[in-house]
Image 1 (cartoon, rainbow, N blue to C red):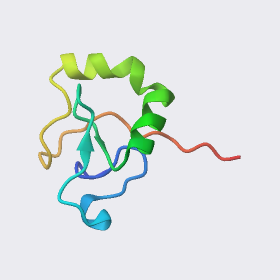
Image 2 (cartoon, helix red, strand yellow):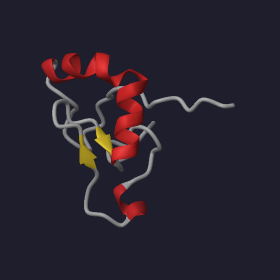
Image 3 (tube, rainbow, N blue to C red):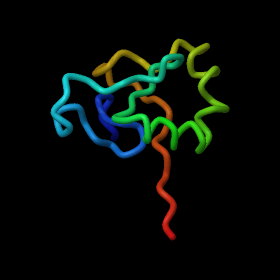
Image 4 (cartoon, one colour):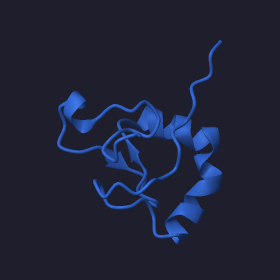
Length: 77
């Protein structure tokens, strides 16, 4: 299971990046390690889900173990 403190795209954690915390989507609070990961996820389908996630209450508070949107699958090629 992906940690609630991990980037939704690449699974990097705040501690592995040596930062206090990851950045979150302003609307739904999905976590990202960088603007590049957030943009990739947005273009990969998050754009269509973001409002629904936010309307449902957004991403749960970190560390409560509740599932959230699945990570973006990397394309091999």
